[in-house]
Length: 159
View 1 (cartoon, helix red, strand yellow):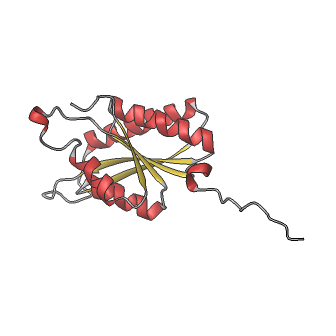
View 2 (view 1 turned 90 degrees about the vertical axis):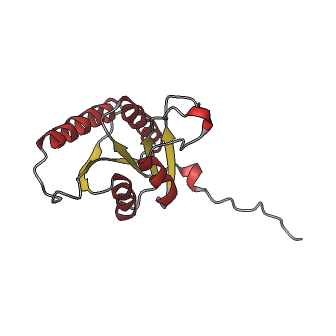
View 3 (view 1 turned 135 degrees about the vertical axis):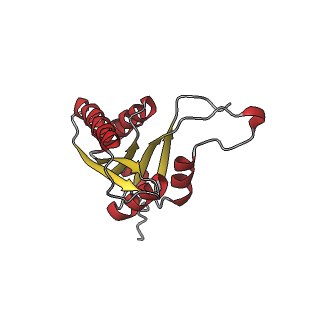
């Protein structure tokens, strides 16, 4: 007598959730919402969160140029992100990155740290006559070049 067994179903990454999340921040209200979204996902699935603040350095300056104001903004933004994570009972890995191009720096960090999901904030620019890009350059670059999934968090409906 032959027996028939049910097919074995493998868990997909969506079933398991994401284990490594990256949240690029700017210190804006949208970044705080992206951080809250990432923390909710991480808390639900036991994931780790890396928070990155990119200081874009002009090509006219060396990458290690003194940028006290930008460094202070980065510290403040990272501290706010850490406070949000703490409210969820989570710890974060913090990065301050100096780069010529923020979008490229985020994509490089995705590759270097083997991220599975980027949760990125986007201010939707007002578009007249429905022309022009829906998102800014950094978000567009990450959407096009990241090797993992990208979740865009925005508070404004498409115009």
